[in-house]
Length: 250
Image (cartoon, rainbow, N blue to C red; front, side, top):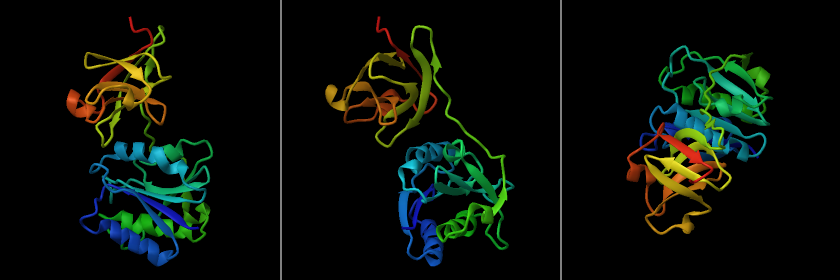
C-alpha cells in the first residue's frame, strides 16, 4: 500500500491542498492520501512541529509524510527529504521536520528546486513531486545531495527542583482549550498555574462539570483543562505561560 499524509496551514477554502493532491495522484494514482490537518495556524512552524511529533511514527513503515508550513517559501531555506525510523518526510528546512530528524538513524537530502517551480508554492511544485518519487520507489540517495545541517527545533524541557518538583511552561493549546505543558507526570502532585493549585487527577470525570483540573495526557505530559470547557479561555493564557509541579502539596 502506498500511503502519504498531509499536514499544512493552507485551510481547505482555496484549493491549494487539492492542487497538491492532484500532483500526488497523477504521479502515484494508487496512493492513499491521509489528511492530518490543514488548520495549523498560519505560518506557525512550532505548532506544526508539535502536531507532526504526535503522529509520524504511528503510521506504517514506508509512509511518506508531507509537512508544508513554510513562511520562508521561495527564500534560500533548503527543501528536505528525510528517511527516519523507516518512514519518509518531505518539507521545508525550518525546523518543522525536527521530530524525524532527531531520531538517531535519520538521514536527510537537500532537494533541488525544479526550474519553473513557483516561488510561492513549493508544496505543489517541490514537495509533492518529491513525495511521488518516494512513493513510486526512488531511494533517498536518488532524491538529492546528503546534508547533515538541518534546522532543529526542540521543546524546552522542564527544570527539575531538588524537592522533586518541576518548573516549566505551556507548550501548546489544543482545540479543546487544554493547556499542554512540558511537565512530566506520574499522576500525582499539584500543578500551579496563574496562582491556582490543581491536584493531578486521573481523568476528566474525576471533577465536576466546569471545574479546572490537571491530568497526565496521552503523551505523558501534564495538561491543564476545564471539564466541558476551555482552560485557555478560563485563564486567559497560552503558549509560554509558566507552570510548575509540586510533589508535596503542602
